[in-house]
Image (cartoon, rainbow, N blue to C red; front, side):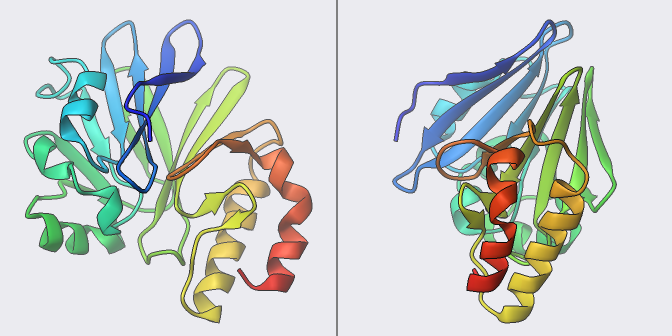
Length: 214
């Protein structure tokens, strides 16, 4: 775990920074649109003081800031209460579980094909059903670059944990059809734990994942 931020992407107007929090190496990401200061925080997983240090003071209270949750599991939402006065976004089928566990209100419940906007930032929502019913990957598309914030649905070496064969089949199908079949090999994948990968690095192994069943 490292509480110092790492810059993973930058172009003329947008930056993406990452910080690792908690004993589980949760990766939290801050996307910033520099011209207007708009920001997204992907997964308020833990250590709210560290996360607040990554976002601008104005962003924490203004309408140009939102916390985007990839899925409802407890280790990805431990610090969400620290941002309860901000826009909170999550998958529609996971929102109630987050609200019940954390005592917050998810004001924006998103599904496959939706778009989340703040200032000059725009992310596409891709539903990846299986790790949880309402898991959402958020996709940032920039000139010459695509970045997928995959939560626990896609990692280097495989899809996320599932508990039934049906859930595994659902997740692998969604990941294949909604990520690998849509976005190019150079697409950067930023998972909820551990190091980044690309779709190109993982694509040759889709058949292996299907055969092994996890």
